[in-house]
Length: 138
Image (cartoon, rainbow, N blue to C red; front, top):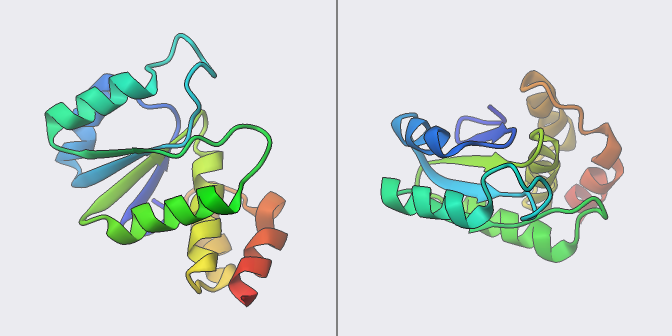
């Protein structure tokens, strides 16, 4: 758990959607581009399973080219608008964690606290720490 309201995860399965609902998740954020792994459930499949489970779904795909201001803003909007727990996923959970960290920094979060929360969840945000610091300084 990145925070009391946000979880980061590796690629989820269709069965994981129901488990997420049981854990109090009200929004799934897909940070994985469709086609990145053709054998994994694609966004439309996860979206349909989320809809069936009564969970919101938002796609904010992050490729390997990095993070844009629009993606950070979209994640901040998703986090701020959630009315319960958020489950963000990608291949390993790292891109989801990085995007969460950037969105929280832009919202005024303390960079050291953000890094500590990510570390406690098993993620190292040092590759985007300069961006976190820059966004938090605004």
